[in-house]
Amino acid sequence: MRIRGSWMAHLALGAVLAACPFASGASAVAAEPTVNCKALAERVAHAAGVSLGKADDAGKVFVLKAAHGTDIHVRCRSESNRAAIVEVTSKEELPARSFYDSLARIGAAVTGRPAKDVRKRLHRCHRVAKREADGIAERAVHGVSLECHRSEAGSTFRFKGPFPRQAG
Image: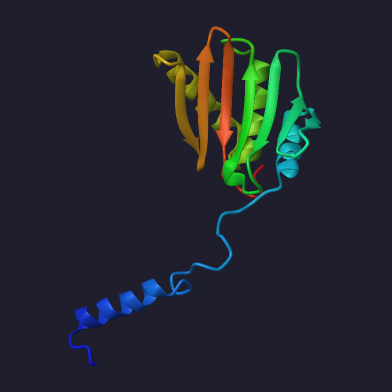
């Protein structure tokens, strides 16, 4: 069959390219970067200036040893960091400056953005959470989801992957 006219040629070429996975730049290997959960937990611990702490039996949840009143967890539901969550909780509704300093360093380590930029977004997200009826706000930091929870019981910040492979 001979294709006449340029629009038909483009249509036919598009159909052929759509059927071929390598023509669009896709590869057989998933483009999503993956990270070992322990390596992510080590990166977070280093950024926070704390020790690694305990892991669950499957190596999917790490509890980092942090200052009194602060909890740091790294959770990985699979080997893909798409399912990884870095959660930092303060028992204070309005955390101290030192908490935000540590949180900004952790955010920089998982997003690849400067700590100063991350800190601004953390404060903005926390302020918005205060105004929300449910006390929850979400923002994005360089492609990483940031979720802020604020209540009288304390404040929780969650960075949700995927995380850049070599951030920080």
